[in-house]
Length: 137
Image 1 (cartoon, rainbow, N blue to C red):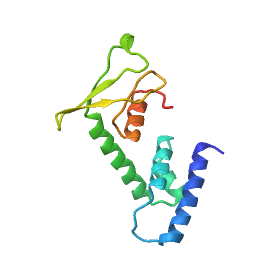
Image 2 (cartoon, rainbow, N blue to C red):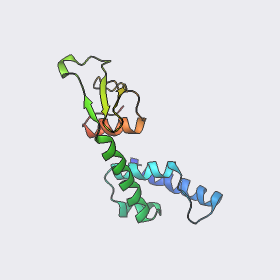
Image 3 (cartoon, helix red, strand yellow):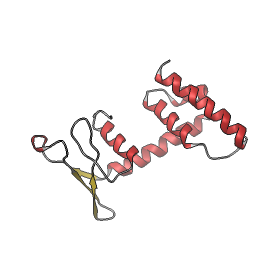
Image 4 (cartoon, rainbow, N blue to C red):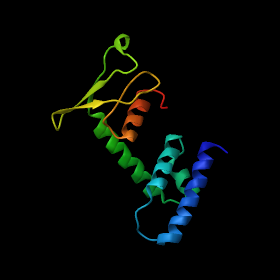
């Protein structure tokens, strides 16, 4: 079973259980479904195909993708300064300057490439590393 097939299977199971527990109608979707739907998109599956295979409305899938992209655009407005590659040690740190709040945030997470990032939500760190073409865990 491919990763996409596994995610679709999990979404269907979670969705069925969710509807049994809270009923159908306008209710917030569980984060577990949203995360899996976004992961399917990251795997290159188009929103229409995601919608038809998971029974999550097409508009909902598109809205989740849009919301995440807007959140990432806001995050990408941060300025990141990293020491030169020759100076980067296994436990180096980077400084992120938040222009709107005029304060610095220290970033510290160890990546296989030798970067250390801390102080940011894990999902944001993963997106930054992926956007830079790096490997995540």
